[in-house]
Length: 311
Image (cartoon, rainbow, N blue to C red; front, side):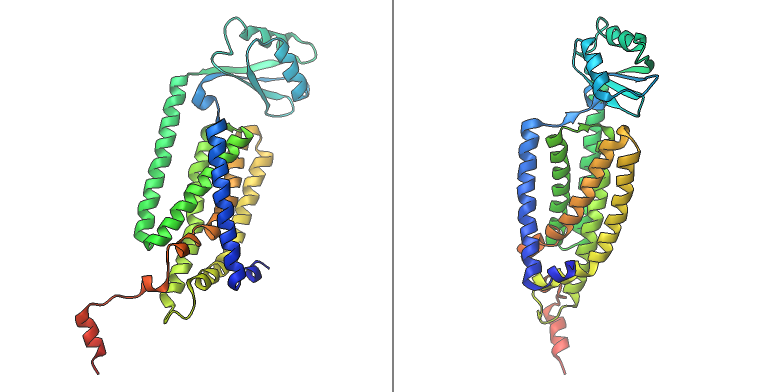
């Protein structure tokens, strides 16, 4: 079915419509990031983290309402299981004066009967250092990717792959900003994984485009047709690879619990938009930049051409 839609002008129109949609989503993501920002977790902001269990299953909203009555600052309560909870507080929200209030309330309540498992403080200086190191790792990965693409591909295909990679990262960050999902170290690690996965998809399509352009002679087929043929020849492999990976990530999302939920959401989104961008950006942008079979013609000097023309 997809191969049918990728035939002729219909396939070209779909690719360009997808590229236009990507541009709109990128603008919306950038706007969301500038307006709402990211919801940084304690890994980056610092603060107090307390884990506790209850003697019986308690509804999250019910427990949150009970703690709010005995807590003077802002906090975030997440369920790690039916009776396992995690409470996060900003440095200014937890003090010696109010911290024992909610803890003693949940531990002394006969219905909740909580037991504190651990309580730790993460300094903001450590969070700043982790954020700087994480951003440095991402920047270094991007630089290495750009160098690799510059060596492997003709510059138009390399630019398409880099733009597709940046597109994927911006959309994932935009989603986290829009939904205010906690951005922590595991999410940052998933962004590094997305860089590798998105690059893999773009290289598969780009390699096939390059192969078809090299065997193209006399410019019988247009660049649009060649790109459509390249996408069709790699589409089955791309969908199978992405589908199996998505199934694995979805299992982590649904079964691994709250600690890995952000990681799974980021990776799931990155795989989806990465597959989309490898077709609508990495393969389409080079066409707009003038990619053609002439870019892969073997160039010979005048002396060699004279020898070739001799009978």
